[in-house]
Length: 257
Image 1 (cartoon, rainbow, N blue to C red):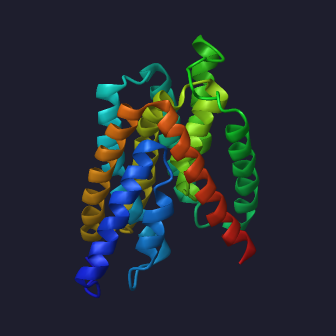
Image 2: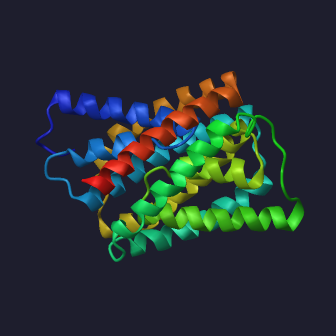
């Protein structure tokens, strides 16, 4: 734990961790809250903040993934190949993080998010029920391709990874929002693990800080997963639109400033 942190700062970090865990558990995108909070810690470097964010994030995604598994029973035939390729992609993305400028990605991601938000709002029935577009090898191949693509993005940049997973599972594969969020938690656990495989040997993780924020993230993840399961796909869809809107504002600010 950095020595310059007072009790108020620790309390705010804990609140940020809980909020991020809740958002991640419902629809993804908790990094919008947690990563900026960590970047405000005195003396922390961006790489340390990214690595510590992954440690806290994996604690939350582990408990939310387990909660979804017990209560929703996500399709592991989709989650397994997607998580495996996402983990490999995250390792590669983390290794590339210092070599590729973020400026190349942010405007493209912003355009995609605006299109996704409009598509979701204008088609209220999307994600209400599961209607898979493919079966068998085509379905598994598409899941694996989506996994490696989003996993690479998570290791490379990271904001909104869980949201992009839900987008792909609903919009490309044809899942309803609730099972999509359940599968996304398993895959997001794998992407966090992949990034940590790269970050831990380099000593970038601040363990004390990460564990404190991670416990709060874990608690938020548990509460968020139970709420999502109880309220269903309609609730997840509403939170999804709100989080995508927040991500658009955040990335739009980055582009304009």
